Amino acid sequence: MSESTPKFNVKQTFLIGLAFLSSEIAWALYNAQVPLLLDAYIPSLFMIGLLMALDNIIGVILQPIMGSISDNTRTKFGRRMPFLLIGIPIGALFFALIPTETSLVTLFLWMLFFGISMGLYRAQAVSIMPDFVKPVNRSKGNGIINLMGGLGVTLGYGLSYLIDLFSSVRIGRQVTFIIVSIIMVAALGVLFWKIKEKDAYSYQELLELEEKEGKKVKEEKKTPGLIESIKDILAEEDKSTLFILLAIFFWFIGYQGIVALVSIYGVNVLGYAEGLAGFLPFFVSVPLIITIYPLSIVATKIGRRKAIKIGILIWISMLVIGFFLGLTQPNLAIMAIILAFLGPGWALINVNSIVIVWELAPSERKIGTYTGLYYFFSFLAAILGPMIVGGLTDLFSPPSLLLNGAIFFILAFIMMLFVKRGEVELTEEEKLAKQKAIQEL
Image (cartoon, rainbow, N blue to C red; front, side, top):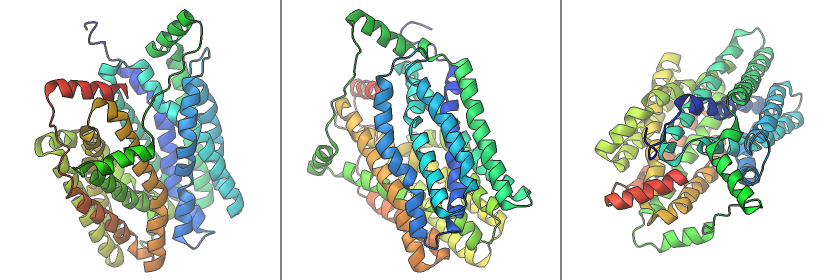
């Protein structure tokens, strides 16, 4: 490899991805089983949705703070690794305690402490990859990190089925949570053994610069605030950016609402055992992982906006079909087929949405601002989605969950009709400048 195209260490990047895997495997089992624990104490799906949004509320507050603190941390283990060494074991401990709840108060406390401990290291788990991987290879690196995250999600939902193999649901749930806690700590052990963050090229460059200047270097990125950024978008003559952000907001409300409450739906409406009900998202995640790369290529052929619209239509049609079959014929094989179609549908939506947002940025200097807006609207939906969809389900009865989610995908589709731009419209020089800005981000 020439000096201008540095070698990409695939094995090292997969090992770095263990940090993200440790987080995602826990959150998957959490999303599958904690709603069922809450359902034993709380009759309202709105309130369950509110408590299921607790981790996102904590994340929005805590993750940027911890990310900034780690940027300015210097230790013999690096600046990210110390937070992983603290956050993952503590998170694993509180995760194992969740099924030991004896009341709503103790359950809430374990959920709260788990959310805080996970917030201590999630930003660092993502940031450690670009510390090792040079900008030209970060797109590949991000693909591997997301693949490891997807593997963690699939394992988390898959392990939910173990619960039904025990004579007692409580014992089965406890054992399954302990297994995931062990996997989290084991992943950290391999990561700490194999990855020496002090050797990361960006960390070494930073230390050399600080030694040369004789003081700690603090990077302060000056980007427009949220209100200022939204005002700029509202003032644009072309409203494509506004409508794609609204579409993102609506489909994430539908998605997050269904994911947070589907295990309760599986038990109370479909009549499945608790382990099997928590296993249902597994049928979505496996096809998602399999199809996400080939469908990203399809989008380059048919266009990003069209790909997203197809993905939304898949979700609308499958949710409506699932609603009627759930009432009349809740057969597992049929439901599994319906859920399997949602995986490729979500791949078409999620792979292309942030790329359109980047494409709509008027210059490479605005890439960071537009990325921040994307995450603001998606995180806001993650907080509100379980409550809104849960509240509607309280109002219209538990079988209406899938239809309530479909409402927001319909709204997202309507928003997409007003997105007029987002395909590649740049000169080669502009493409290179934007790609560099994205990689640096």
